[in-house]
Length: 420
Image (cartoon, rainbow, N blue to C red; front, side, top):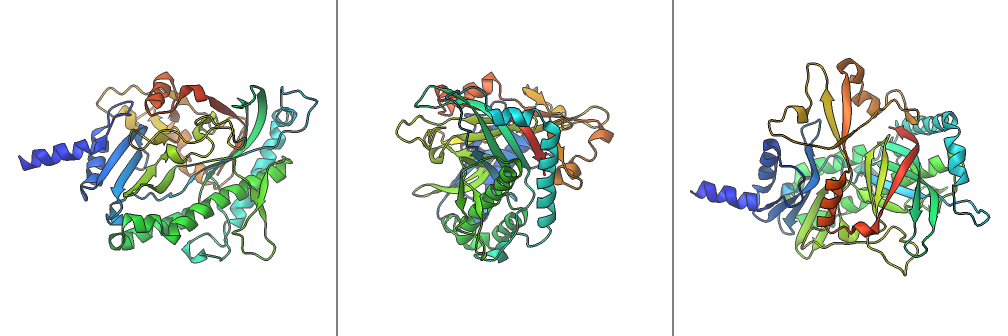
């Protein structure tokens, strides 16, 4: 009987209000394992919950009491990885708000775009072989940024909250972080997680340094792309660059982290895994579908007094939901003898998907990149990658999560994308 009551208590701490399809047995077992060490923990499942190719459970928000030891937190090996977007400054025109001439110029010469983005990726790959970012670089030692998960130029049509004028804009978006430093952070939790509280970890120098360093790395790569393509973007002096020469980096328009840790109330520390805190949204939420398809920019709450937040501000509350998914995920299906995860499930899971063709004309990879290494057996296994699709049931579910559909969505369509 005590065993049954314990199981009931664990299941009550798993918030499944916003799941689109049932948790698998492996996912339920993972949730139970995360909650068992402490009664002062809970988990909210995102509609994009899944188990990835490495067998890791993704797509949730984990809450823990501020005085619980930090070893109960499900820290990711890619902590503070995310997306940074910078909106390009539109060229002055004769009052016309139609098509962006720079976007047309890029779209009409894709081969040149491929050469330029490949040059940027190759430069980053070569420079990243030295002075990799780690905790030994704290606080002022120099380091080099690492190849991004992807970097791309996108275009889209948007309307402002204040003036109802449709504008065609260009965006540069970088996804990634600092692998070696994130591994240092993960190993630090393994070594000393039982000696510090979650609140102490959340306010630690390591957390602040890694979050800021990851953002700076993405902003530097965006600046490199802008310079290579001759795009005008807002820039700022990198105040954390301690070299004698200094440097400028891109000024982020919108930023969304896939993995984060925040203090969400007086006594609760939240770990976000492929989700984000809607209360702290600064200028919309970026949700990538996949590199060939583009990125959805979900606008936040409308505000009329601040022109810098043209994509809305925070919304929702932690007392109801306060979380939001941060992108799609791949579903691997193999056509011959090997089956993907969702083909081997016993329950009838209906997942709306969209196919990805990694050999499209506007997608660039470089030899030896992480993307090529992860997909080197694609042709031999006849692997067909499909991604979870943002369909009507998904959008309606987001409304239940306190997102206002009237805020709107900006679809960022890829001009050229480089996969790191």
